[in-house]
Length: 178
Image 1 (cartoon, rainbow, N blue to C red):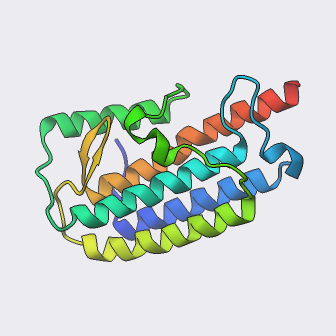
Image 2 (tube, rainbow, N blue to C red):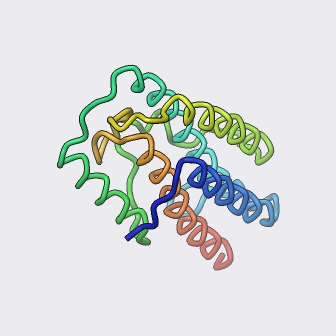
């Protein structure tokens, strides 16, 4: 069972995860940060860009969803639990087709620019947390799991980073093997 955390603690955890991930990729030789693996996957910078795009998109939709929160049903709860469990595993997951054009990495990526965008998204997330205080309904509909509360969004962001930490490990091992 996951320990209950309040919004401030979740945001603190997310900031620490972001700091660690950025430091990890920063430690890679610059010429390897944007190398796409032979299997056609994303580069390390692509992974970071995807995380920023995902958080930004969800924040935007959640801000809209706060105006008319939805009821969280059993299917939503089960869907969230499944997504959370899969993302805690080392299982590879494809981006849902319905959101691929929005959250897949862009071109010409640079670590400093990604870090700056991620910081801006986190400021937005903190502001959104104040607006979401006391809201228990669904404010964002994930394409796989269904409606999520604001707290579930924070949990999703955290486990999403964990999922992509595994991906960075695979990318690094692939680069070292070549």
